Each structure stands twice: as C-alpha cells, then as structure tokens.
Length: 409
Ligand SMILES: [Zn+2]
Image (cartoon, rainbow, N blue to C red; front, side):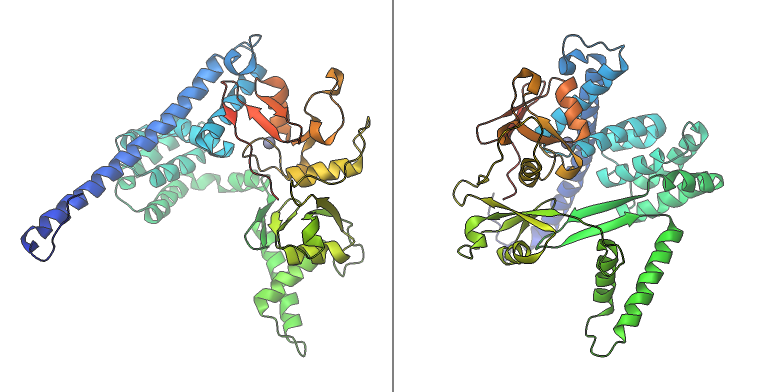
C-alpha cells in the first residue's frame, strides 16, 4: 500500500475519504450478496440430497421413500456443518431462511440477493415471516410488501422493531392461538460460561415466570434484612434459586451424582492442571480438589498425568458396568459427533463396532451418540471409527474426514 503524507496533502483528503466511504459501501453490498449466495449453495446441496438420497444413505435408497430422504437430508446437513465449521442447527436455520424467504417474502429475498439488504435484516425478515400463520398467503404478501423497502435502509435494531410491529398488525387476530402453540415449546436451557460459571434459563408461560420471580424476590428480600447479612439482593436471589432447584433445605432432596475428571497430580496438589466437570467442561484445580474431597454427590475419575488416559478401566462384560458408563460419560461429555452439544448423560452409549460383529464392551469401543447421530450412524453412510485410545473419527458420506473435537481435559 502506498504511504500517504498527510501533512503535505490536505487538498486530497476529501477525495480519499470519499473513496474509502465508497469502498465500505461497495464491500458491504458484496458481503450481503455473497451471504445470500452461500445460503443458495447450502440449499442446493440439500435439494440434491433429497433428490438423490443414495449419495448419502447408500445404493438401496430411493427418493420415493420418506425415511431415506429424511436420513439423506440429515447426513447432508451434518456434512455441511463439519465442512463449514458450523453448528448443524445453523445449517438448518440457513436452509429454513432460504425456503421461507423464497416462499413467503420473494421481494425481500431478491433485494437481499442483490446486496441491498444486510444479512442481519434478512434474518429478521425470515424469522418473522416464518412465524406468520401457516398457509396464510395474504399475510405473506402483505408482510413482504410492508417491510422490503425498509429492510434496505434501517439499521438492524430499528428494522426489527419496525418489522415486528408490521407483523403484529398483520396477525393481530390470532394472538391467543399463537400463545397456545408456544406454550408447548416451554423448556429449560443450560449454558456453560467461563471461569467456573454457568447459566440456567427457562422458557415459560409469562404467568408462571412472573410468579416465580415474585416468590424469588420475596424470599431474597426477607433474607436481606437478617442481622449480619452482607450479600446483595442479586446474590441472594441467585443463592435462593440455587437452593430451591438443587433441593437444599427442602424436605426431599433429590440425589444427583456428577463426575469430576481430575488429573492425578492435581488431586495430590502437585499440579494446577485444570480438571473437568461432567456436562460442563474445564474447572480450575482448586475447585476440583474441593469437589473431589468432600461432596458425596461427586465421583472421581483419575487420569494419567502424561497421556490423559483413564487410569482404571472396568473389565469388558456383556452389560455396560456403571463405572465404565460413567468414565465414558466423563470423557465424551457430549455426543461424539463433531460439533454436537447434546450432553452425554442424555445420549445413547453405543458400541462403535456392534456386539453382533464381535465388538466388545470396552472403553475403546463405546461412544455417546445422541438419538439423531445414533440414527445417522446406522441409517446413513456416515462412518465412525475408534482408535486404540478410544478416540473417535467420523467420515462423511462424501469422504470428508472430520477432525475430532479436542478432549475436554
Ligand atoms: Zn449428536
């Protein structure tokens, strides 16, 4: 790049600014347009997979068999996710975005494809369009016409507020039905955060959530006035929540056991190498020693300080011994498919080589697979292999070898 002497070149600075502004605008349009092109490419792969399921499922597959088509689609989504280093859900979301915009907001889609609408606004368009009442063509047309122009010039937050208002106007008469169907999606989410912390959140009907918060506030408030209490109201709320949900102080505490995978030298206090908490990930050495020391709800799994291998393995037997199951849980932490975050405790413990083909019940022939990836393994051409140390490699139907996720310890 050519050096610019700003002291002797005042006359041309306005020109340089103009050209840099023009470049920013041009590149932004290019990014938007390329983003749309990537979505189209993902859509094309999935269309091909649905049309030719044999590529992903095997020669017996037929496009007229719904199961084959579904499995081909899922194997292809996994293939894309691994190649693009994306979550499978992101691939699904991209596919849903293309299909929704093509079907419901063709005007906005065309402007997105040309680079007039940013990826952020396009996502908002798709998300809100997807939530319009199924099959209500008049609503699709009205929404598309109402938002397409604004999507090209409003910043994301502004546009979102505008588009939501339009959507509400268009579907105002179906509010009660929508609440009823969203009720069925209530759930609890667990998200590990950094430095030994994590989030628990719940998606609940507003009345339940409001009542819960009111009760939490009341309890925290009554504790806060106790003599000598130094915790803030926020801390008290968190502590009360934690006590309630783990059953501390209640008449019938629930017995839960959680594994902590701890390097031997760390346990002995000779090393500060971090340990790993089952279903969460790394925790610092000091907390791990405390957990391994006293809590009855914790079981320990010692690892070799050099190789990281589990030091003690149950003998192979016909059934899967609880100890072996726990070890595999602690090592896998999640489904072993690359990028899958499903917690091991909610997964199937699968024989990599099936027992009917001579596969043994050993640490090196077992891995956790969530229901979806378990089905992918048996129903599609995705292949799993496991080496002598029990490490797992997945190969996609199109021959892509997925590098395994790094171990949690
Ligand atoms: Zn999985």
